[in-house]
Image 1 (cartoon, rainbow, N blue to C red):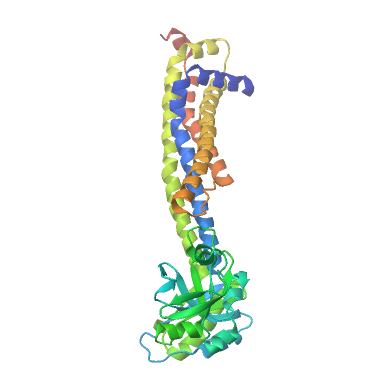
Image 2: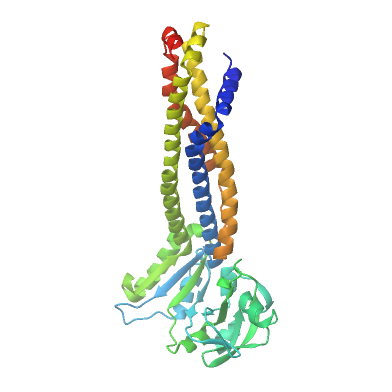
Length: 397
C-alpha cells in the first residue's frame, strides 16, 4: 500500500471520531505549547537583561574600595594613572560617587531619583547622548561647580521638556541644570532616566566625607576582561596588601552568570513541560490499542485479501504519527498565540519591554519530539495489529 493511501486512511480514522482524537492529542498539544511558551519567556528575559546590562555598559569594570582591614587609601590620581598606564586595556576612567539625600524641585520631593557624581568622561563611557545642553566638563570637576545633568524622565515629568537653566535642590544646595540626556531605557516609569549627574568633586563634598570609593573603567574590548582585572588588581594589591580591601566587578561577567542561570531554569522548566509530551504519548498508545481491538475484523479482512505484516504495521504507525503531528501543529499555534498575549500582559503589568519570543529551534524540537513520541508509542499497538492471525481476527466479535 502506498504511503499516500495509508495517510488518507489515517486522516479518515481520526476524523471518524473527532472528540476521541482531540482528547488523545491533548497531552501533545499542552506539552508543545508549554515548551514554546517557556523557551520564549526565557529568550525574552535574556534579551531584556542584555539590553539593560548594555545600558549599564558591558565594557565597564567597577572598582569598589572598602578598605577593610587596611588604614591605607588610594587617590583619584593613582586610579587615573592605572587607566592611563594601560592604554591597550582601558579607554577612560571615572570616579563615581553615590549621593544619598533629599532631592527637591520646588516643593516637590523626588523619591526614587538617583544622584551620582561622575567625571567628564562618564557620558562617553556609558554611550549616553544629550538631548540638549552639555555634560559635565573638566572645569566643573576642578572648580566643584554646582551644575548637574538630568535624565529625560525628570525633564519631561517636571519641566515639560524644557529643563535647561532651571534649578534642582539636592540636600541644602541648589544646582543649575546644564544638560538633559536622551532616553536611556524604554520604560515609561522613569527607571534609568530618573537620574541626576554631578561633578564627582562636588558630589564627594555633598556626602560629607569627601572620600571617593568607587571607580568605573571603560575597557577597550570586553574580550580583555581577565587582563584588565589583573592590571587593576596589581595596582590595588600593591596599595592595600589584601584583596579584602577592594572588589572588581565586570558587567559582562555578571551578564554571563545571569544568562547561564536563566538557561538552567528554562531547561528545567522545559523538561518538566516535556513530561506532558510523554503523557500524550501514553494517551496515543492507549487509544491505538483500543483502535486495534475495535478494528480487529477489518485487519482480518485486509490480511485475508493479501495485506502483509509491514502493510498493517505501517498503517497504524502512520495513524499514530499523524495524530501526534496534528496535535503538535495545534500546540504550536496555541503556543504562539499565548506568547503574543503574554507579551501584552507582561508589558502592561510590569511596564517592561519584555517580549516572549519563541525560537525556531524550540518549535522544531517540540514538534519533532511530539511526532517521535507518537510513532514510538504507536509502534506497540501497530505491532500487535500486524501480528494478528487473520482467521482469529475474522472470528472476532
